[in-house]
Amino acid sequence: MTDAPSSAIVIVDYRMGNLRSVEKGFAAAGVPGVSITDDPSVVARARGIVLPGVGAFRDAAANLTASGMRDVLLERARAGVPLLGICLGMQLLATLGLEDGEWDGLGLVPGTCEKLMGGVKVPHIGWNTVDYPRPSALFDGIDEGGAFYFVHSYHLAPADPSAVIGRTVHGVPFAAAVQSGAVYGVQFHPEKSSETGLKLLRNFATIVEEAS
Image 1 (cartoon, helix red, strand yellow):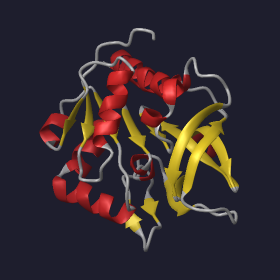
Image 2 (cartoon, one colour):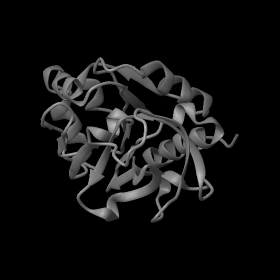
Image 3 (cartoon, rainbow, N blue to C red):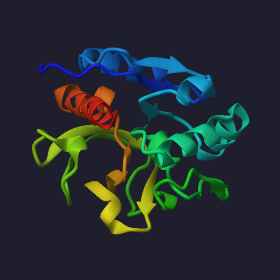
Image 4 (spheres, rainbow, N blue to C red):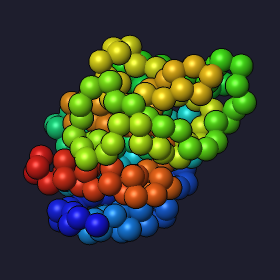
């Protein structure tokens, strides 16, 4: 394992689960100084932000607003603080979520969160290889076609195809990873994706270090 830089990364607790596994993933990746918080004032001082999540878009969007996290996430992301959305956290980066209605997302990666189509079984659960249509520091040192672990029924469809930095196929091609400035999202779970996923978490820590 290569050394990871020091970091002050916070994992946002907005009552949508998956927090401890992400925290443990960073620890396994050798990234120090990663903590979980439900305090917007702590997020406002963070050098890097992780927005994880498992569950429904509607509930997640409502929780972000009610907790005061929505405004601080938008403020910090627009200030250039690196942010990584994981699974539902990536979907929330969209402008609009289409799960059981229409719900406002963060709009940090313009587009819609849509149900997986293509006549395949959902939720999509398992390992898929990911190809990289354009270079991104998030995938530095990760081989083309690396495999990651997915558990989801919806996906972010960016309005701008150039936002896609990782692509996979389950029935139809879809964005496995996106980037807009210092905002990143991955539909898969890096914390459950063995050494390849841990490398991605170390890469995010490096992005945070270099942005500080």
